[in-house]
Amino acid sequence: MSAPVWSQLVGQEPAVEVLSAAAESAAALVAGESAELGAMTHAWLFTGPPGSGRSVAARTFAAALQCTNGAGCGECTGCRTALSGTHADVRMVVPEGLSISVAEMRALVQAAARRPTTGRWQVVVITEADRLTEGAANALLKAVEEPPERTVFLLCAPSDHPEDVSVTIRSRCRSVLLRTPPSASIARVLVERDGVAPELAEWAASVCGGHVGRARRLATDEAARERRNTVLRIPLGLRRAADVFACADELIKTAEADATEESKARDEAEQEALRTAMGAGGTGKGVAAARRSADAAVRQLEKRQKSRATRTQRDTLDLALVDLAGFYRDVLVAASGADVTLNHPDFAEQSAEAATRWTPAATLHRLEAVLACREAIEWNVKPRIAVEAMVTTLREGQGA
Image (cartoon, rainbow, N blue to C red; front, side, top):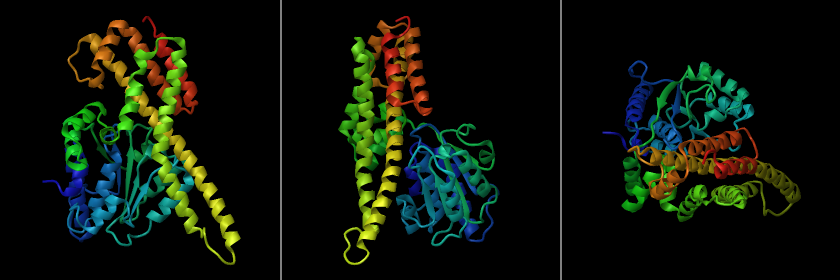
């Protein structure tokens, strides 16, 4: 039976088997006992589609490595602090902007070279290793090639393709491939862990595309559900030329609203905490100098927050584009009469209607426009320009 920490991983039984064996091996090594050869290693690469739980798997594995009662009891201080992100020897690297710089990575590698202070291992989790700059990747490579004895690197990336992770780093890591969780597993965890009503949980699981975090948000946030409906109404709502700009504007505003909602509270809390740490509100000598230092530090923080907001907005917009691509895929399914599961079963009538109005070639052309928009934004084309070009193609089609 799996230890409690592994319940965090939804529908990932093969990965749990590998990681739990490695955690047991790691515990044996710490105890000075012999461990199964190859079960535990110093560098791991977690790959899988969006929503499969790459960072969750890494954090769960980190908790199992720090467990003092076995290999992931979920009850000891090591497990609880690692899962909550407060363990002194578990460093979570979550890129604030669009990339991870070489300076950030060098500082991290230097810190990771120290021996564990309170835990069993020094664990470094890089949640988006595909965002490493070339210099940062080279700095990490040196540490992975010659790792400290009690340090473990856990890297997360969409795939092990060279565009996501360099060949040299990949070759020094043990790979753990995560799969898209089945909808039944997602629905079950929404009910049991988040207290969602069964019917709503089943719906969220069926439309989230295997993305556990997205399912939870759809199930618990009515505004998120409405934003999804807004996006999926676009394909059949493009009747006039003016609709192109209206729908493009709606897509951008939806992404901005989602990103703003996600980051506003966090930004304000960070700024307030920084001002307090810098002595804001103090009295006596040196207050003016402290205030100037605090203001300068806040400006630097605001700069980082702006970069993070840009990234959040792009990620949110990308989710909307994935939903659109899923709709056009459903149209192709309806046109072919194939007996397969739809991405958006609650929009089955709309996709069936579109299948009667558009030729398969026109639908495919529209799908390609959505994918091209995603790629353009990834290459830093201004989102509004990329989205307007896409929506123009969605309205005109080709051979419609």
